[in-house]
Image 1 (cartoon, rainbow, N blue to C red):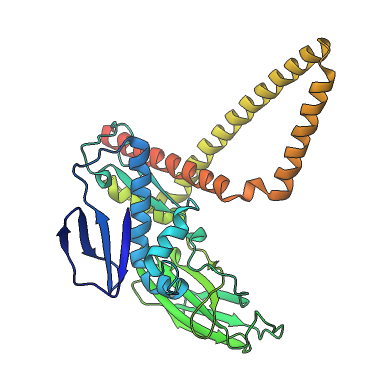
Image 2 (tube, rainbow, N blue to C red):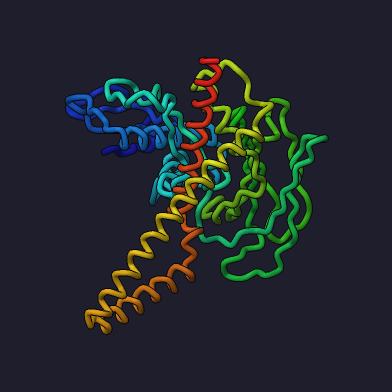
Length: 349
């Protein structure tokens, strides 16, 4: 259990059963947590989640300029880095993979030495709120190395659409750890806002998130990723670095992705085969029950199953955060296993 003390940043040390230390990313904030009387050994599942959560916190540090604008201090809830981590942690945008899939998990060893964290950057949340967003179109000019954000004047003003609402664009490159916050135009204005991209930024892994805020900075709208860099390339580079590959993958990215897609397709086919086998088993059980005179009970169960199917259709199960997080996690696990297989083949050949 932890708590935050705002306005105090000079306290550091242990007092009774509490540990005090400055927040690593938010100036003027002290974190207080209970002192543990022994080091807790994590099981493998908890260790993986711990690595994913820690990685999300690290990315939040790099994204701090944007998190401070997207999650402003309101006096009622966490803000900045803490709010960024809290909001994104529940959406499943962060996962972790074993650096050495063949080595059993060792609770005595540091989690960071056994796992690599990976982030689903297109689905990161940089702001969350109910302010209606300003329509913004983001384009990347690679030759000129600049981002253009084009807005049209919003004439649909009302009680929740103020003419002085302001748009923001947060540019982030995970490769160079560069974060740029660009203030855009007011809701009632139209035009284009350009931002120069520094030379150290990798344009292939550049992401742009846009959202809207009141003139005083709070509250905000939900953020949206308008420019999606190659999130898969970031994952490949991070896995390759932590696995300490002795050969470059830059010239084989397409083939590597094709190998991952083949394995995912094989797994999907196997899941479908098992689903069909289970469906056939249910049909056989249904026929047996009907033959035994349980027609009314079978009819009621079929109707209930149909209603569940309708709810799935109207709620968009495939687009639910849980399903997307599962797909992201599975792809990252397959990607890590594939790179590790390549490493073993290279070392043995």
